[in-house]
Image (cartoon, rainbow over all chains, first blue to last red):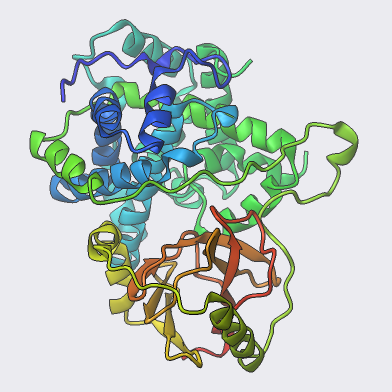
Length: 199
Length: 253
């Protein structure tokens, strides 16, 4: 509920650690503990919903997708594997996948052409330009994002926040197909290294 | 570096189209390096959400909490051994695909009859299944209403029937059952999608409900078929029994 609720997540959790409070809430949720799930929701909803809203744009649809995502999280909590990453990343993956599915099925229905894609790009997401972000963690992430090259950042933002495929990203940026996926990967690798994820 | 490895980043941010995603997931099953990289890059991408947080409306919280009260969490999957022994890493798919011959519907029905007999006089327990199904309604409804929906219906000798509907455009498939007997004690019905090269990929568990609409998980846009098997409770990473039903989508219309 509270947008400034501290999410312990970002601290690149040590592999599958007992120190991942979101994972602990997820494990209790898997056993049917609704209070734990409410805490999980409170700790993560702003990030998941913010992500979904970025991708989907339409607030009413974003609400639906966020709700669907949390129901999927509740239903499949037992399938979270802490050996494969943090609980927060798992949650965000579920939200992102659903948001992307939503915009792509809408896109299949209306068939955006390149012209439209270009307009979209003008209105496209630019998180680095946004001010008003408080919190140490947000500042760390912002700094890490700023450490990317401009073209890497652009490609990642279009893919992650714009919900475009790497082929669409290439078209949007007038790149040969195949270049966008490299930029996305190189950018994420740099982000990973700057933030100290994995090791 | 082989080209497919370069897709880790795009995969981590869902920037692959349905066909690429499917192909890359097959690759992931055999490539430990890519699995590690995908999990690290997914982690890195997830950190970006720190920058876009927007609290949802309070009513969303109430709606979610009200709805989970009616939905049963799934049991864990049996753990899949992700052995890191380098020598076994070569080409062994450890994941949820298994080549399966295409089988005629007739044979599948015979098998279904056998399974139904095995279940015997199981008690029918009424359950508020609509509520559990409601969370999937939007996606399932889209498939059922899709202009390009294709379907295959199988009738079982005991009066049960199952209709599989697939929309390639939606990329999903839906199973609609009628009068299905419950899975035997200690077993679950598990759903599978058949890939164009004949592999069966996990598409989720089917809850024990006589009449229901189940959205299969995973991309069904290129599936050549779908199957139902009886598996140990919680499901299996790959089919361990012959399907009790197989819906051949290559002849759907």
